[in-house]
Length: 295
Image 1 (spheres, rainbow, N blue to C red):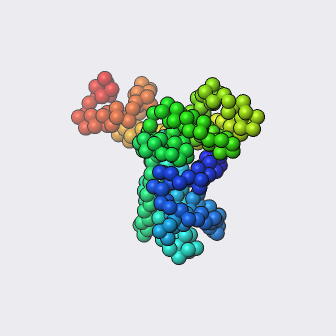
Image 2: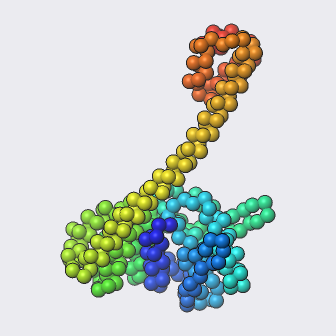
């Protein structure tokens, strides 16, 4: 996860006593600061000691990462080593693209499960109704109409004051970067919350949040674009490989039956789809001439 999103998420949860925080952690009594020693250090996003005595771990994710399942297993083993207890785990997903992260790591010898909560599929009504402003802001990442969320958050911002007001405005702008709304939020804050933006103390903090939201939104888009490109590249590689294999087999069968192939036959094969190549290969069993086969 991009660093700014990471810091913002942690701040919101550690400050909150609202609906989403209670759903994930219940009542928190402590936030152990854990860095797991290993060949590479693992630092879980959020680890809470809850009022019922259990430890709960939440990992915050804003884009698809194929390594998440194994990382959750690594965290779980580290917690067991450090605390001597099994820790409940949740992946909290807030990305733009459809969720593709499984709720388990599984190999021939290991099966490790954890919960996955997709904010993008949540109804944000309960979050908007909450008295906790962090809940109101989280609603922006749900499927609730963003206009309703912006209206509710701006109304709540006007009830806050001082540093809390500036922090709430800047974190809201940063959250907007996750779903590509940083430009719209910048415009709306400048027109509807002009008193905040022009305040000599609060304005710079909010503008910094807007800039962070913009930069992180751009980075988020680049990360998703790279992931999408990798997926498309893998699919294209499979398609090309299949086409070449079918074409090679067809050429061998044709050469065995007809000898040296005319140039026009090679051109047809080179530009054909895998489906058409397979059709020609099947029709060869009917003993056609070259003209009949490629007619």
